[in-house]
Image 1 (cartoon, rainbow, N blue to C red):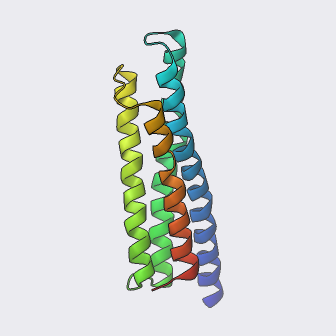
Image 2 (image 1 turned 120 degrees about the vertical axis):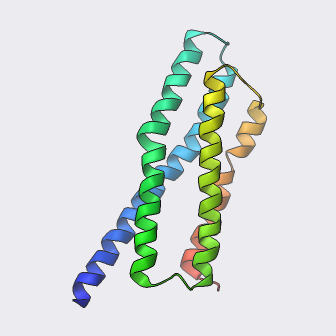
Length: 147
């Protein structure tokens, strides 16, 4: 029985890591797409292509990966009984924040598709750093388990 639980844990962990990589890749790509989108001429064919690319990235990679990250992550936390550990609470705080960032990006993409360009390219480039900072903090929390 212990062997089955250990094998299940390893598969959950592998699945979680795989989908975190996909999700993070999408979170790095989408703001960059938005920069290129904003630099295209309003109403142009190029702008239409960016709208299509952004929608595909969200629907094919980002949102499915977010769902799988949460499913694998919650199953993983349950399998090791981590619910009472401080590092997991801190990690969840950052993952919830990153999920909110994801949601904000989706909303901003819908505004861009309607022609609303409320942020500058520079602001979008700065926002592109959020996933990297969050990932660094999350990795430290999971590996070091400081509390």
